Image (cartoon, rainbow, N blue to C red; front, side, top):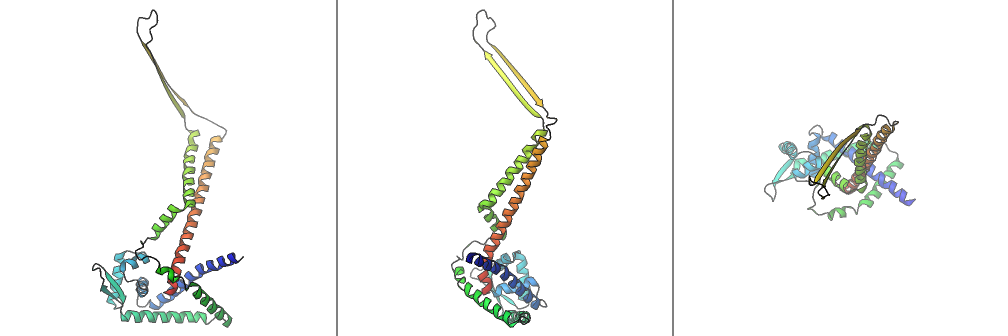
Length: 283
């Protein structure tokens, strides 16, 4: 009973936190909409959270580095972002200017005011419950940032598609479903054999050099070949039933593979959210 209750709460956390963060991002983007595009504001937020490399920001947002660089140019022109030479002279470190920090802080205050308008409509009891729940959540997650401190800084960065490929390769359930589908498709191809002609061929060769009494023509040899072809005209719908059954097996295997893919994707997203949740809350 306690395990089921804990699982339910953990699931609610994974569902509610992304919704809360999406609402916060929506309000923040609305506050900055008059001056920045949504992608530019996301870049500003990334730099505010400590992402100081254009390459990392491009990877995080899923766009090309060239596109990110162009948008950063716009922020630099506005005086919100500045580039500084990194130790590696081939790269630059990004940071918010004083104007950029002021702009972002003002946007946060506007967002806080927008959230306050929604919270103020709650009853005193609901506000108390919400405050209590948030404090408990904060206490629960307080230890998790330590986990991020143990993650090596040289860890390889993978794209989402690369993560899916690796997870699929290492997931036994997915591989079994994939192999079962391949086997079912092969069986489906073989099920049409009853509608095709059956052809068989044979060849025989013999050589005799024994000396028989009275024989004057020496050793003898002989050979023979044969080719047979048959066509099944009607088998009481048995052949059609085999094809239908093979098609049904393919359909079942495809459904099993889709289910395995969906479960794999859900598990991967849950693991990713569990990894990123403390970082999201801290930022």
